[in-house]
Image (cartoon, one colour):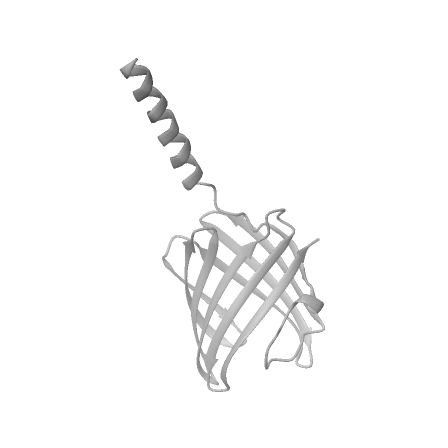
Length: 156
């Protein structure tokens, strides 16, 4: 009887631990900005904001196409989600980013050095339960000021 109780308790503990160790979200997909649900803050609303993400944790590759008053350009970034620094280059300059998980939220801390000085960005990516909506909350600071953005992306 005592052995049966211990066995039941062990099974309950294993089930609880398995629930805590849930798989991280996978952001893989083609994403398109939902402008109506997004808030670009003090920045102009883009005419186009699309992302192609390939996510095989810890590897994360993001190709972003943005079009607006400054023309159209594509950014290709490669990251890892294991807390190691990742370097990428864009028209804004050289960026160094560290990605980590906060539960099921992906946190991206970036510093960008370019012709316009240094800028920092802190992004928090979360995926809806159905996997069809990616929400990216951003706080940024730089020579042009400080601000907040919320970009909502729909899976295509």
